[in-house]
Image 1 (cartoon, rainbow, N blue to C red):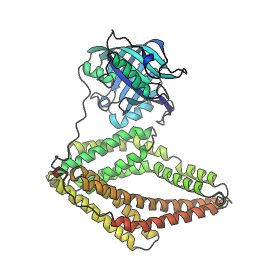
Image 2: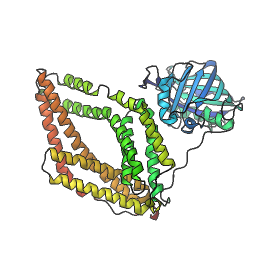
Image 3: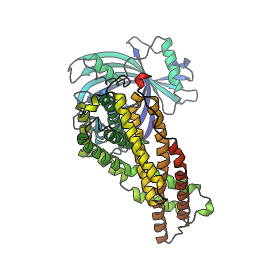
Image 4: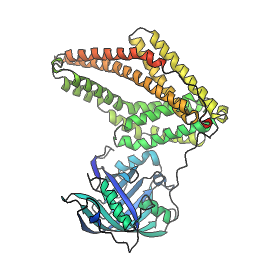
Length: 522
C-alpha cells in the first residue's frame, strides 16, 4: 500500500520509501464495517485475512521524535516486517522509510534521526501488539483502491511509565498505490453514516503514549510578534524558525528530496544574515563564530546545488540552439564535463551532515536559543530597533548597487554586482525577520528585494556560466572537437548579462525602502 519510491540515498541501498496516505477512525470490539461497496467507485470488498503484528516503538527519553510527530518502530508479523521510520508530510500523509529486520537500528535510519537525537540514544518506549483484520477495496476493473483494517490494539509502556497498558480498537483506511484519493472521502462518508467517527489521535503511538501516562511534549505556541514588545523576542523567534528548518531539512537532504539542499542552504544564510544584521540585539562576539560555522555548512552543501543549477542552465541553453549551431558531440561533452565536476559533491554534503562539526553547530544554536547573548537593545521596543536595522542594511545595499552601476562593464563590475546581490539577500532577510512587527511595508520590501536579488542572481549565473563555457571550449578543442557551439553560448550569456545590467537601474529605482510602522499599530 502507499506510493512507493526508489531506495533512499541515506548511505544504505536497502532503505526504501513509500508514501502512506491513510485515515483512522474510532471503533469498539462490537464495531462492524458497513457495506463499503456502496462507497462511490468501490465494486467489491474482499477479506484478506487476520494478521498478528508486534511493534516496538523507539524514542529518546524525552520523546523528542514523538514531539516532532516522527515514529520509529521495529515490527514483526505481516508482509512488511522490519524497521520503519515515518516522517509527517501533511495531515494523514506520511513518508515511511523501511529497512530490513535486524537486532539493531540500521545505519540508514540512524542518519535520518541524527539532527534530532544528536548523540542521545533511542530505546524502546512502547510496545504495540495488534490483531489486524484486513479487507481490500477494488474497483470494477479489479484495481486495488484501498486497504481497510480493523485493528485491536494492546499497548504497553516500556519506559517512563513502565508497565502501564491501554487497549482500543480502531479502523484504518490506507490508499493503494496510484489510487484516486477521492476514494478515501467516499469510504469516510459510508463510515460516518454507520456512526464511525475519525480518531482524535494522529497515530497509534500518540494514542499509546497519551493513554499509558505521559504523552509527547507539545511544541510551544509561536509568539505573537505583533504584541511581543521587545526586539529580542522578535529576533529570537526568527532565529528559532531557521534553526528548526536546519533540523527538519537535514533528513530531507540525506533522502535527496527535491530542493532540500537549496532550502537548507537558505536557512543557513538566513540565520547567518540575521545574526549579523541584528548585532545590536545579539552580541556578535558570541554569534560571529556561529556565523562562520553556518557559512562552512552552506559551502559544503552548495557544491552539489551550484553544479546542478549550472548544468541545468547550460543544458537548457544548448537544447534551445538551432541544430545548425550545434557542432560535434556537444551534449555528450557537456554530460561528461558535468559528471567530472560533480564527482563527490553529494558525498561531500553527506559527510558534512555526518561530521562532529555539524552536530556541534546544532548544539551551539540550541545553546544560543536557550541562553541568548542579549544586548541592551534587545529589551527595547521591537518596532524601533528592527526598523533601524532594516534601513541600515538597505543603505548598505544602496552603496553597493550605486558603486557597481558607476563602473564600466567588465570583471570589476561583475564582482561588484555579485557583492550587491549578497547585500540584497541580507536586506531581504532583515525585512523578513522584521515583517511580523513592521507589517506591510516590510513585506513590500521583501518583494522588492526578491526582484532585485533575482536580477542580480541571473547576472551572476551568467558570469559563472561563461567561465564554464570557456572551460568546455578549451577541453573540446584539446579533444580535437569543434568548439564553435560553446562560443555561441558564451556570446548569448554575454548578451543575457548585458540585459540584466540594463534592467538594473530601473529596478533599483523601484527598490527604495518604504516607510515603516509597527504592525501592532495597524
